[in-house]
Length: 210
Image (cartoon, rainbow, N blue to C red):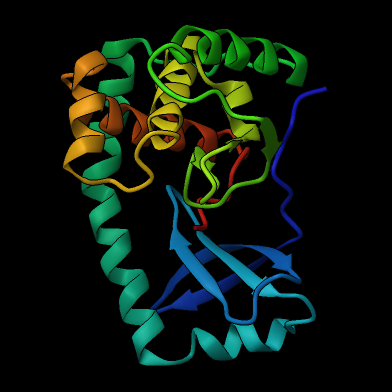
């Protein structure tokens, strides 16, 4: 069974004569709304219990409406570029089971253990805004369940990134020195992750909400 981020509800709002789809996820862990303009819709993560009327009232104000129109315009320019790059790179999602993901992650933890500290525990869960993270104690790593859809080389990149954090917790010069030892072109890889995020969104596997 493959992992899929849930979508609780879809509403539609009219902004200056254009109808926009709003995909909503309710989250009891947050107190304030989070928003993002995805490839063809607005994504909202809302506190549990938020009413539909709140959504309609929110988009009646000029600031959110201006934000939507600005993001829509940017997407009209950005998305064709993403689609072209994805075709040129033949980039595709490669679904895996959770057990398969765990095996791949463990393989690369083993590979990079001689360079860094081996984590005592490894977790897999929903993460918003990151593909993985390292605990402040540097002995626990957590990986985003959506890595189940990534080609293996990108999973390796995420594992290496998090293994560096067992040595250097922050994104500072020592961190990037270690990153460049294996990935001197790490900026290109970061761009590829944006393409993968776009693929996840177009396949309705992720709501793009940080």
